[in-house]
Each structure stands twice: as structure tokens, then as C-alpha cells.
Image 1 (cartoon, rainbow, N blue to C red):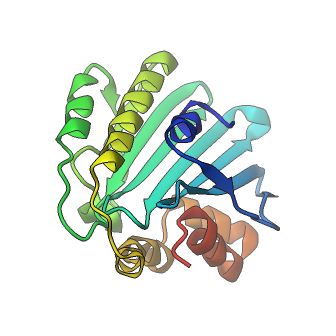
Image 2: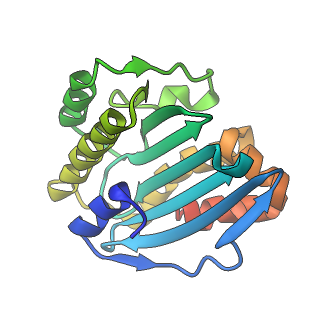
Length: 212
């Protein structure tokens, strides 16, 4: 498997790999990406994207979970290493039909208050971020503990999550995904620059978020 965060999903359910041809690997502007996409346990799309640049001095690892059969928010994990600086971005996006109790995730966030905060630039999707979202920098082992604890708390929600009609939930997920496509963001802007608009939009809809 690809790393501890992906392994956490594999331990909780069946990951069925999708055919991501022709975007298993793609590159441009000094960056090389590798993509994998899965159907997870018949209830969510889980995608895993890695990037290397500057001879390995810059690395990024992204996991996105987009539930389509359980009424839970989108979860996004980004680990970034840039010239020795380590950052972790954990984001939870409001795409559920009804409110969900995220207090266990909030408690994880509070328990890692010793880590320094990152301060991302303001973005159009700020209003969709839910309270457990956190942006931290610091030593790798401590960031790894935070990633594991937060992902585990998120996965625990699936045990009691309400079943939801897939069409209804997918429309909620699209509010975020189509917003990314319309308004842009760091990731989709970079991919657009390499693949062009049509390919980038297909990659995001079909493989990263599974809304197509």
C-alpha cells in the first residue's frame, strides 16, 4: 500500500483500484505526479496523489475521501515537504446533507495545540471548511501522529453514519468540486497548466473526487 494514511482506509474496508489511464503518471514544469483512485467499501471514492519536484527537495502527498453512500463530509489530507520544512493540511468540507457530529475530530485538533499553525491564503472555499480542519507545521513524527489520529477519528464516523441516496449526496459533493473547477485552487491550477482544462477537469471529477 502507499503509506500509513492509505493503510488506515485499507484496514477498515475494501479498496478497489480504478483504471486511471492515462493519468497514472503525468509531469510538467519540473513536477512529477502519480495518481491512484479507489472505490472504498462501496461508500466512498478515495484518491491518492503524490508529487515530487526539485530532485526530491519538494514532495507532496494527498489523500481525498469523498463519501457518496454515507452522509459524511469530504476529508482531505495533504503532507508537504518543501526544502526541509514539513507541513500537514487536514481539511473537512461541508458536503453532507444533514449536520454531523464532528466533536471527536475537534478533540483531536485541540490535543495537538503544541504544533505551530500554518496560515493558508484566503480562498473561496473557506466558508465550506468545517471546524476540525487544521493546518500545522513541525517535526515529522508529531505531524504523523496528528494525521493518524485525525484520520482515525474520521473513519470512526462511518460506523454510525446515516445512509444517503447516492444521487443526492453526489450533488452535495459537486458543490465543492465544481467550485474548484470554476474558481480554481493551487492543485487544479497546477494540473491545468500541465494537462489542459478538459483533462484536468476530468481527472478531478472522475478520479480525485468521483463525482462524474
